[in-house]
Structure formats: C-alpha cells, structure tokens
Picture 1 (tube, rainbow, N blue to C red):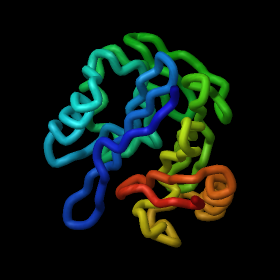
Picture 2: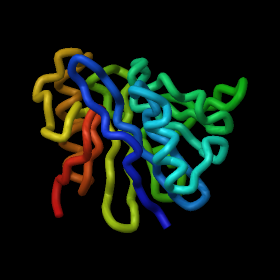
Picture 3: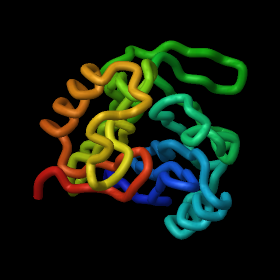
Length: 182
C-alpha cells in the first residue's frame, strides 16, 4: 500500500512555513521537507495521529537546502536524508542514481532545478493518485509564475511541464495541494 498524507500546509508571507508531507510506501516512511513551522507539534501531532513515531521514519526527502525546508530534519533520528545528489545516514555520505532514484518501490526523485540548482521533486505513485512534492510552485494557486529567487527560470518551466504531465496532485513548497486532473 502506498499513500500520501499532508502533515502541515505551508505558507509564505510575513511568516514562512514549509509544506510537510508523509509518504507510506511499503516499509518506507518518508517525511518530505520538515522545515520551518510555527511549532514542532504541527509536524509531530499529525504524524502521531497516523500512528508514526519520529524514530520510525526511514527517510527524509529535502526538495532543496533552504532553511525553511530543512529546519526540523533532526526530529527523525533514524532517517536517511535524501537530497538532489546523495543520501546521508549517520556519518555516511552515500551516492544515489540521481534523476529517477527510487527511495521505495513507488517513490522516486526527479531532478527539477529552477528555484535552486539543487531542487528535486518527489513523485509517488500511490494507490489513489500520482503525487508530486515540489518547490516548482510556492502555493496551491500555482504561484508565483516567475520565481523571484529562481536560479534558472527556464529549467523551472521544464520541471513544471514534466510534473504537470505526470501528476494528479501537487504539493507545492508553501501551500496546500492542488489537483492537476481528476
């Protein structure tokens, strides 16, 4: 069984918080972007409601390395951290295959630079839909059209096209999900 659960819908404005998601895929429990939130209980309480202890989380996936997406990685002491070019466990720096690398049977990362040079999108083929967790958009309204901090707007646009062609539901970096198609 593969499922995706919103733990915290992020926001951006006078305050900033990342969108935090839990993916269950076989034996893998993957937390995506455990970054800035008003208080850690906004991540931990929904996780507990799903019956998941922080120590049971197997992976933390980081869309990119900005602090608003990484601040709470240490909440998951046994997790392997996965970013655009490697996996990290304890004092090990382990390579992975890059674009298309599978964290679990139905969960893979795509290299989608644009907001930063190090961006990834986590794509999950769940039982009910195909999900994408990404910073290609900031909010559920698919904004901003032009990312004011983009390292490469053209690459960002290519990533958006790729994600929209594959996903049913997108979780943007700082907002609730939006549906691409029913």
